[in-house]
Length: 409
Image (cartoon, rainbow, N blue to C red; front, side, top):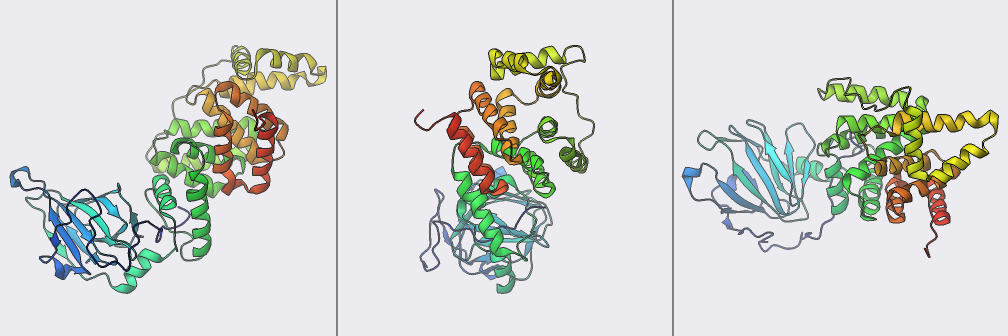
């Protein structure tokens, strides 16, 4: 269940008024596609790129003028499309249309009814690779009429090209949610959360997903958390790492917030065919948890600082310091599935998302600096989380950062 269905992203290739054929890539444009013109709405161009029939792998570059698309059709042997220029769409029968930008790959299974073509406002080129050519036959069906085409390509308003590309990276398979009920909001939020805020800083996709996942746990935001699960698996984050983000959040957000999301995670992994329980990541025992936790705690915050916390704790409160060392660090943070830098960044993300934790936020800013996460990384993390946690918590986090790491330093 993804937030919205991608509609018409803005693109530098917008050429609605341009009628001259456009060569959009390093591949030749070819000639007007006369042979298959009766199966297309609008003008297309075809350049065959392979000639050796013995290789059994016909490849062609197909270019569509704005608004051009082919009829509904299927291939008995399947087909592969690789977008190489402009902006286009691919749609299977009964599913939302998929935006295609350069670099996108579409794998079409045998006998799946579909169409593909250009966006209304852009030329589009893709490579078409015929699979199983010895037996592959096309079945051409009815045209994609103007109403169906307009609905498929503009149902949810405009996303910028960057926002659409980032959204597609997070969620390769879309599932319309707000497109028909709140298209304006889908456009505003999509352009901000997947366009503007992701343009700031140099966090990689994996880190952006992980910190957003940790934030959604702190907020106990079940719907958003489900989306991050989809994004995580789609971008190479393992089931063990997904579980570790949850476990890591327990000493900071509390089991009350994590328990429901643990159930969501288990259901999600089971649906994906992943057998539970996963391999245990614990490296401590009841006898070693205190010792190992204290060593890790001192490595992050400095031995002198931790010793002082123990020395200055009133007798009736010393147990909290011991719990921090043995439970928070010994039981959870010693687990090897996530490294120390990642864990400190997740802790920072959880604390700023909880709100009201400014004292702890400042302490973990210091911890992040000690393990190698600089101010630029922390500012990029705050920016990534802004659409999900709102401005008050965001600005509080920035104030903490500026206090601990002043701009002139």
